[in-house]
Length: 101
Image 1 (cartoon, one colour):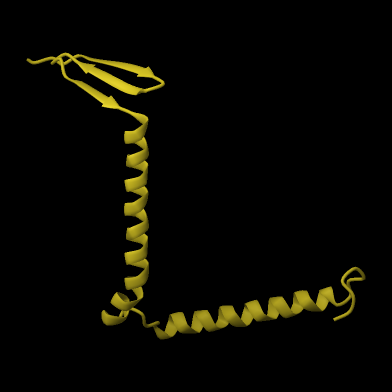
Image 2 (cartoon, rainbow, N blue to C red; image 1 turned 90 degrees about the vertical axis):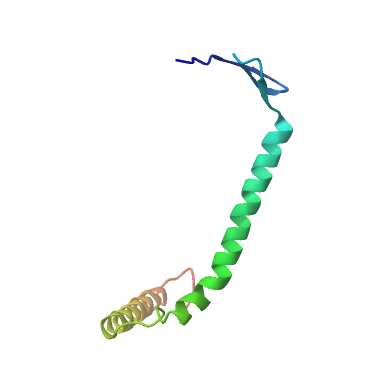
């Protein structure tokens, strides 16, 4: 069996790994900065592409329609939220610090 031994040295210049094969792998702060930059760029582009095309793809696949039951639940939720908001504003009308509505 081939055993490999690794020795890692950390310093202010970066991380150096000395392998038993004699080759060394050096991770400098510049490489770390580039890694973060490119990773962030890929994430940003992924979000832009997905965000701008998802609605179009869902529409083309006819997956943007609500079923009758879901539409009824959505309408009921809107109705309940409106009633709660009106109730809360009604209670605020009596607040002496905010004044009358």
